[in-house]
Length: 360
Image (cartoon, rainbow, N blue to C red; front, side):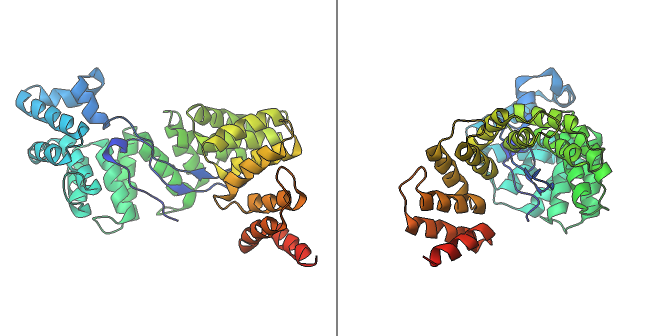
């Protein structure tokens, strides 16, 4: 399991991609969503009042401010080499935002040869000046051992500094580390506290995960109403795993009246975003006619989508449909093929089905 993945500079302040699981069908897939431009850069360029702490540092240095914006314009045009060459002198003068950006360019190999050691050095310079995103980024590099020797204690130290400044990504990562017990003693209560901080800032992954903790009673008292509330917040931001989780709760009647129609609607939202479990579940509902009109062809369509992602139960069910000729012409060879795929993954139903087929 790779706990972290790289993001582009444009996505640097979006969700960090982590691999993290919650039990009882409350898994979480972490993603990186792209914003239109680096957060600090766009604020300075646009003169937003929210960037006053950064913009004020440029007011006495208008040539530097112009150079910064020229670099940003070059970056937007994907002229990364020019952007790098314009930002580098500003970073060398000690500007913490430029230092942070140079670190990101070195890390991502944009406009310069990828160099994690250089990236770490520049992130560290900006972090030591209090740049929260740089603190988070150098923490990430210590966590992964990129450009620096892996050091979970250092990673946590920098995550904490960024989190104390209110950076939701850092708060979220600390929650993940406490949940996994990576570099710290496993502590679900601490995980819940940090997820909650990030969730209250609208961070979708944290909203989903605090929902999962409430659903499973990890670190907090089990509370299905709270779980549903946080799943809903994440789902409203389009987070597919939360949409799937809502479907599970409606199907199982967890904290809500059992409602197959609602379950089907939420599964469909997640399925359309490619969540294999949701694709499988909506397939089951179509096959059983629960919450939707029975439609074997639709069931087959969704089973196929899940099966193509390696979902063993979906592969088994496709075999069943082919065997019975439901929603598709009867085809024992196809049944054998799909059961074989599922059986290779240890699916016991598929193994039993193959045994029955071989007795014919």
